Length: 133
Ligand SMILES: Nc1ncnc2c1ncn2[C@@H]1O[C@H](COP(=O)(O)OP(=O)(O)OP(=O)(O)O)[C@@H](O)[C@H]1O
Image 1 (cartoon, rainbow, N blue to C red):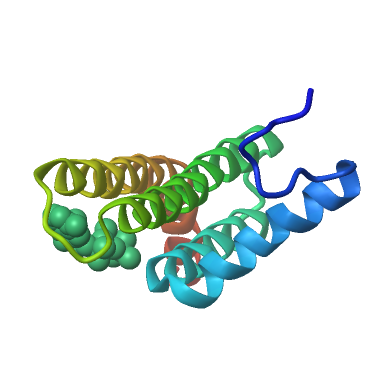
Image 2: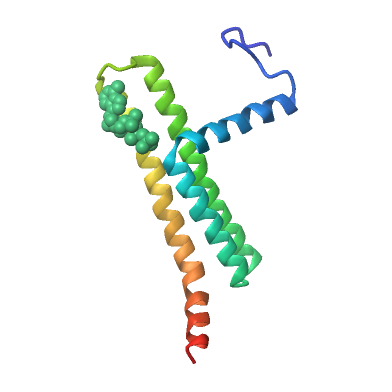
């Protein structure tokens, strides 16, 4: 269906993917928190592989990290929309939108840290214990 109000509509799936990747690149280049989450998330998955946790556990960790990164991207999208709408003027609703978007990132981060801690700390503890004799 043609969307009349869009300046441009992606012509096919490949073009849609290209624009989505541009979104990831924008977030990575401009959002420090997004970069931090990419680094922590990659480290957690690498640690899971190193500790040989099960594939189901790796999947759960990956899912929670994916949720955090997706929340970061939505947070960036909402920030941009708010700035587009109110520019540099103060508005109580702009504050609510930005604060709630940031809170979504925070809550998903806490959940991801809890999941990674529950799944990675016990095998890490056993590994360290076996090293120390
Ligand atoms: N136009 C506005 N009106 C009211 N409050 C605003 C407005 N713009 C920003 N704020 C307040 O300032 C805070 C920081 O705004 P900013 O645009 O840096 O978002 P942020 O969530 O901190 O960004 P980031 O996720 O990149 O750290 C917001 O959470 C909000 O409380």
